[in-house]
Amino acid sequence: MCGRYSRVLSPQDIDEAFGPVTVEAEQLEANYNVAPTQKSIVITNRDPHQIQLFEWGLVPFWSKDGKNSGRMINARAETILEKPAFRKPIRERRCLVIADSFYEWKTAGKSKQPYRIYTPNQKVLVFAGIWEFWRDRNNPELEKRTFSILTTAPNAEMTPIHDRMPVVLAKAEQQAWLGELTEEDITALTQTPMDGVLEMCEVNAAVGSVKNNGPALHERKSKGLFG
Image (cartoon, rainbow, N blue to C red; front, side, top):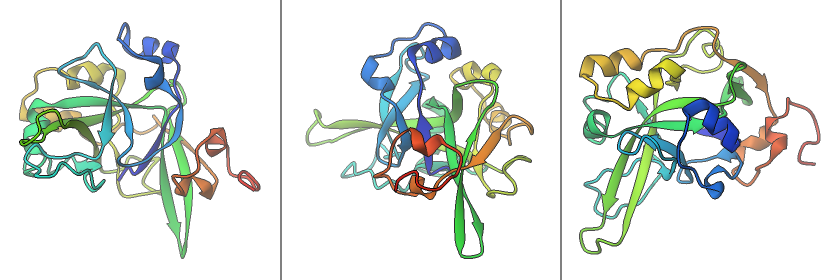
C-alpha cells in the first residue's frame, strides 16, 4: 500500500516535470509527511494544465454524508475495474498524484523500520491516481474533491520492503494516463514499475506520527532527529 508520502517541490520542479501549468504558491507548501484525509496536489484529466488540491481518500459520489474516513486512500490496480467505488473513476476521472518520495515500513520481528523511497534521477515522483467529485444533495454548496492512489505488485527494489507499491508513472506514461484509455490501456499502464527506477534509505521512526513534519524526515536514519 501507500499510506504516507512527501511533497517538497519548487515551481521550477513542477515546470520541468509538466511544462506550463497553473499553480499557486500555497499549493506548493512543503509537506514532508502527507497523510490520509489531508489535501495534496494532483493534475486531473479534466484540467490537465492546472495543479489542484484534493483530499487524499476517495469519497464515492454516492456517499450520503461525504465523510472522508481515509479508508480508500489506495485502489488495487488488479481489481480497480470491478470495485463499485472505483470502476467509474478509473474510466472517467484519472489523475496524476504529485510527490517527491513515499514512505514504506519493513517489518522485522516486532519492529518496523520506515524507508523513504524516491527516484534518483528526477525530483518529481508521479503516482497513477483516480479522483471523485462529491456534492451534498441537500446543500449543493457543500462539495469536495478526493483522490486515491493506485497500487500494484512490488518491483525488485520494493520486494524486500513490502508486498505492494504505488503505480509509479514514467514521464512517457503520464500524458497517456490523462488521455482517453480503453480497459486494456488501463491494465497496461498499471503494471508493476520497471526495476532499477527507485532508490531508498532508512529514515527515523518519527515519520510514523503525523504530528512530525519537516526536513529531518528526509534524512537518513540517525539518533536525535526529534530529541
